[in-house]
Length: 338
Image 1 (spheres, one colour):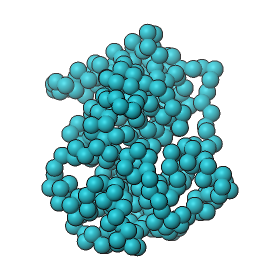
Image 2 (spheres, rainbow, N blue to C red):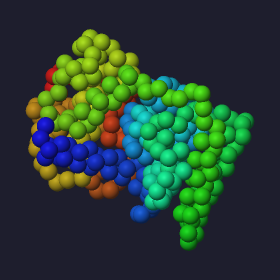
Image 3 (cartoon, rainbow, N blue to C red):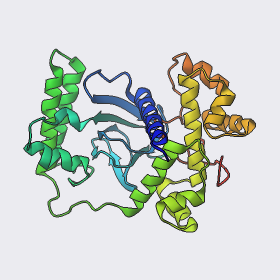
């Protein structure tokens, strides 16, 4: 791939990440302050949050109900009161227990707002950089009934209170509470249990990134397996085990989500959008889009583009594809190109 192609792919990925942020937390973001909070309810707002990752720190703070937070495919049961910090770059997903209502607060912030410009800053070298690199290990969810938990909860509740009022200078209060959060994570770190990277997770991540950046191009199971360093058969088993769906289903979902982005954010003709998102057969695109979103592409554009609130269950607020059970998990697609 040439330098321009790499730059275009990176810009495309950033646009979709911006779209993800817009759809998830646009009402909660303050320009110039990279700290965002928003309340989510599964399944009322969306039926789950599929596997994705980003460069920000994220905290899942469960308020009601129960479910599962998966971090690098390791599933962790959660319930009301559970607090799950997620490090930058960690793949994660969120789902509620079947038949239940799970309410949680999502807190996402850039560690950069706590970084210092001073050379040889202790906090940067001992806390911030290890968090960025995934080298600071601690128990997750934060164990309740411990000093660790009480200190983390105090920090988060204080930041929430400051955000609720937003008095002049409230961002200083938020930052002070975040520093106390980092102090708790560092103090109660698992000193003798450094995190070892999961080779399987890293290989799957490489495939997810390839799909995210090149979904419009011909992509095959064979090519994905080669990228992951697996045989085709082993790759198919690993991908289905970790992602809960086949590679072809995932690829089709990514293309459909990309099409939804263009329908909502641009005035491009529907046919052109279908082609630019990897669908050569317009009838197939229409059929799959209706199955995924419960409406035609044109209906989607008119409804979503007009700024209406999305209250359709099963449409997760993320640019990464959904997993089975969201109305798209029964996808049947060609292994080489949807």
